[in-house]
Length: 115
Picture 1 (tube, rainbow, N blue to C red):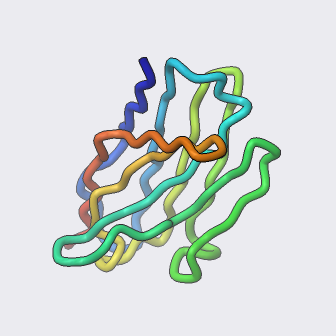
Picture 2 (picture 1 turned 60 degrees about the horizontal axis):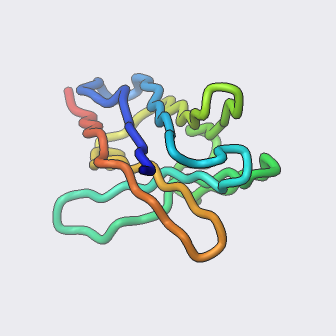
Picture 3 (picture 1 turned 45 degrees about the vertical axis):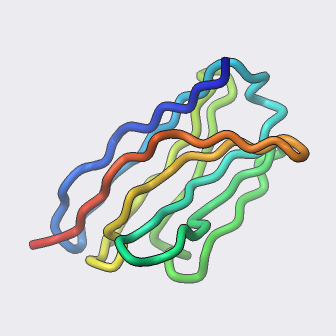
């Protein structure tokens, strides 16, 4: 059974930082591409950052220079370091695992950026 469990969300002031973690089980983690997505109220889910099995990263323009995605294959984990957070980063953040045509999603972790 595949499980993705996110953690690390919370309430942070504008300009602050958070690190999200996603731990996977039930998959051969090093073979899977991983990603972070987010969905704000009333908006569609969008890709935030992805990292391939080879470690190649990609970011949505709005987070470039502020967010960093990384993975630790020994721990079956993917991380999203978020700096200089803005109110518009407020959303439910999801972890996704992809291998060929297979996608698995976590339940999400809430990030709220507010003073």
